[in-house]
Image 1: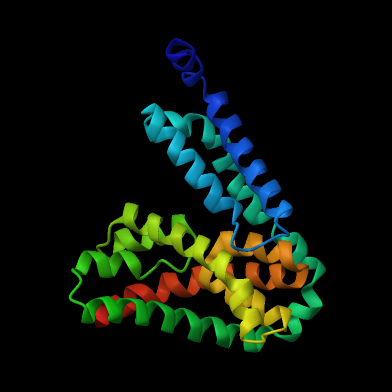
Image 2: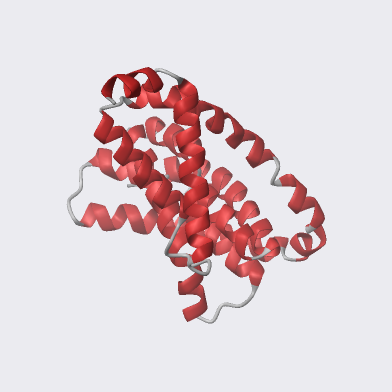
Length: 234
């Protein structure tokens, strides 16, 4: 069995297959449980793949040789968000002013509260700079983190954790708060959980997914400008 695994592990297609298989299995499990947001396919897939890599002693670099094909499609998927935006453009345009105000206030306060809370707790400057941009998609957050003296690798972990937690908690939390407007729900999820939350929003409602995409794009621009300025003040 060990010889067989060594042989299979050398092929990038093995890790691509395991990545896709883990996600498909997680999606089917979520559907079997009635679409529960607590059974998040991304979280289950990450946990399963990390377990396999740990048990087999496989370095991440080897895994990424296969997973890079999925990684390449992230850019395509992001650009494809323009399609539902075009279809829902009338609804987006009618709420564009309030949406921009919401994004500016939400992103500014989110980053400020995260940083000041850790600062009051005595966290080092590198940790403050690492968590400040965690509200946007990973590539942008890592670039901003490096620019302001943070640790890009730690920022990536915080971004992924934020996305998974946001996608998992958003639906039950917004239901408990009786927020029924799909535009408002989408903006909240897109701001707090970026790409992972946007994918979840599209599963719940097309309009919510569209506004989540708007929030993800807007947050990227706002955070890129606001976070370096805020960290300079602090």
